[in-house]
Structures are given as structure tokens and as C-alpha cells.
Amino acid sequence: MTDPNSLPQPDAQAQVQTSPLRCVTGAIISGGLGYALYSLMIAIATSFANKPIHSDNQLVVRLTSAVRTLVVGLVALGSGIFALVAVGLLALAVQILVQKLKKSPEL
Image (cartoon, rainbow, N blue to C red; front, top):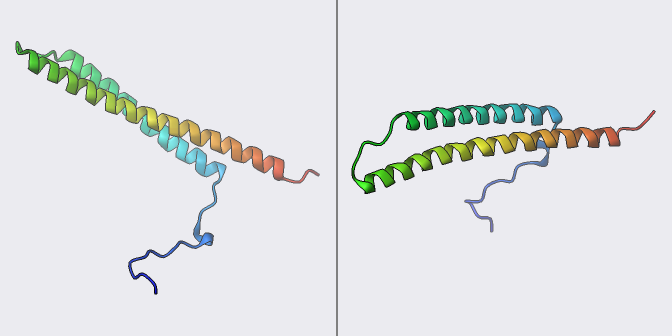
């Protein structure tokens, strides 16, 4: 009795092998996105700094400050995650290269 809603399992042959070139390509893309988010974070923070809050209401000042902090923090978090992924992919590329060099027969 098979379940008609079950998903077919992918073939083992269809899986793509990890290579140093694929890791470096992914690291370049991730690093580029991280740098773009970092630049966006700097632009957002500068924009917020150049536009002070004009209100006498203490609640409005606190909420605006909290929202500004949240926006800059989320963009910084995204930038940091992409940067860590780039570093991890570069480390994986080095690890794969070292494993291939150790595995190759010496002549």
C-alpha cells in the first residue's frame, strides 16, 4: 500500500558532487551579497542619522528609535550571515583540495 502523496526520492546519480570551483563560486556570490547588504546598512544608518526625530511625544521617540535599531540590526544580521557563509565555503574549498591532494597517488 503506497501513499499517493509521497514524493519520489531523488536518484543518487542525480546528486551533484561538491567541487572546489563550485565552493569558490558560491563564496564569491555570498561575499558579494554580504558586501551589498553591508553597503545598504551603512546607507540606511547614515540616512537615519541625518534625519532626526521631530517629536515631543516620548512614546513616538522610543518607538522610532526601536524601529530604526531593528531595521539596521536586521540588515547587519543578513550581512553577517552572508559573510560567514562565504568564509565557510572558502574553508570547504580548501578542505576538498587538501583531501584530493592526499588521495591522489604519488608518482
